[in-house]
Image (cartoon, rainbow, N blue to C red):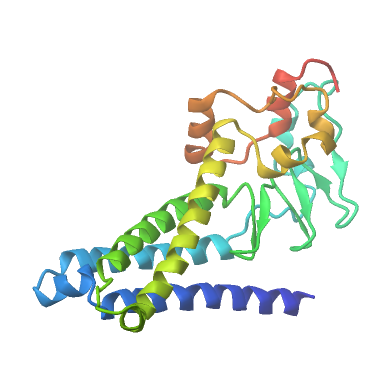
Length: 264
């Protein structure tokens, strides 16, 4: 099973990387704004575009290979013991023990069937990066989406600048064939990344994960709240600050007990 996951992950990452650089090469070789800048000796824009693409690839590998927050031990009773002692025991939600890896799950954690591990503040398993998105890599996943979107929109503009008009349709398709293929791929990925980024920024702004948003009715610690209530929501500004600027592990049980209407 582990070898199959490694093989799948390698193929996904290799395909993404190959597709990225093939499209970049097409944009540099055809008569686009990049090529015209090179011919005129203006290398700033081509260099900036290349660096943006390279940054998107580096962030892709960083997010796909990063530990998303795998739970390896019953850490709730270990390293976080001091913080847990500050929570009134009568109000602390009862922690679940995972039926697959037999570890105690902190609040907002979930077992990933693909990775075969429990993940802290589980958001979703992303087949694009072949990794889970969780507490440790979620912010970097959004940064990656933002950089990837900028690179795709710029590539879209560059591809359109290289479309050459001809006298016949047949000649037009023959001359612009590679650019049209690149344009199609970049256009589809631009829409997908834009949708993903918008959805994740919205969920972050209300301090909700994809799993909680999609499966709220099946999550025990949310059943005491109405659909409009969220025990982890501290307001848009605080939610964004906590998500992007606070790097320490959060004891979600403590925040939950502050906002829960009744003892659990």
